[in-house]
Amino acid sequence: MTIPPYAELLGLSLEPGDPAPTLVMPFGPDVIGRPGFLHGGAIGGLLEMAAVAALKQALETEGGGRVKPINLTVDYMRGGRDKETRARGTVTRLGKRVANVDAIAWQDDPDRPIARAHLNYLIAR
Image (tube, rainbow, N blue to C red; front, top):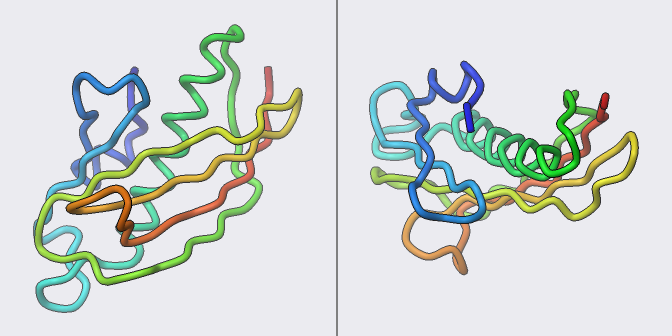
């Protein structure tokens, strides 16, 4: 699976071995907000890329397609500290023209996310 150029800008990589695409974002100068913490935009970008990866994987099983974001809602739950951050998307509905995807971002434990997002996509098959 290839990841979009924006994912490369954030330094994202795919975690090997997971059946669902899990993206990893290293902490570094390009993603710092206030000192010692991740920028909210970097977290939002990570969530969006995780959602796209999950949706692309789901579409591959149905012959592929292009996706276009309709809307995105991010809930920030706690500050992202100076360590690696992971994110994974889950396709909750895959219709003919619209898909709904949830994504979470975490650092230590996926049961304690730092942020979550709900995204809607238009699908062109």
